[in-house]
Amino acid sequence: MDSQSRCVVVTGFGPFRQHLVNSSWEAVKELSKLGLGVDTDTELRTLQLPVDYREVSRRLTTIWEDLRPHLAVHVGMDTFTKAIFLEQCGKNRSYRDTDIRGFQPEGGVCLSGGPEVMHSVVNMKEVCRRVSLEDVEVAFSRDAGRYVCDYTYYLSLYLGDGHAALIHVPPLSHRFPASLLGKALQAIIQEMLEDSEEVQTQSTAAK
Image (cartoon, rainbow, N blue to C red; front, side, top):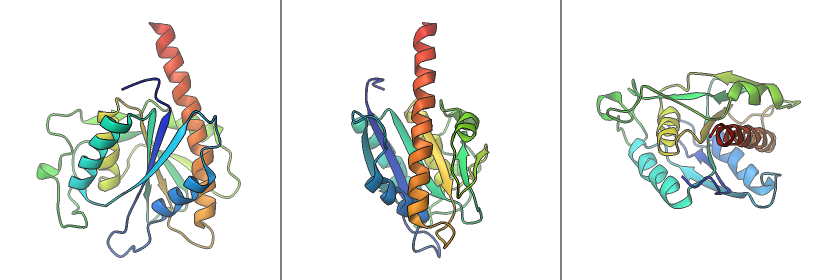
């Protein structure tokens, strides 16, 4: 990965099951309007991913080979939450739920022979501590749920050498409109970028 790349890719997901509107994509669309709110050298690219294991794998490969982002942030919807969760790691096994095409990964595995767990270079606990949002709680998580979100995260962490993040947002509601979730994404990603920069600086200094 090109450490000098200043592209940040942010993805949301399309419809699945009974959820015809996915709050993750609505939030990402709002973020696209707002921008990252950081230095102009950082380009924001937003993409929608289908809730489809095989297509996600293909598109992630394209993202990391062609765009080579400094950070890839994947946004998913947690249908049961009333908070925003920052996921620290992706898991390789136990993917038993089928996607929108009725497909399930062979053996329930993301990557045959891959590490059991992949961790982000971003310290999600630290980002939770530093980010300040008035209207929504931001919490830390180490279990992303073993569905297409978790699958996406694991593969992106693997392909991007840890330079990926997963944010779970609640469904849209009067309390959580897309505009609020978009602003929350902007604030969280700003902190993630700052944290990843610190990690990179420390890594360079150690060499």
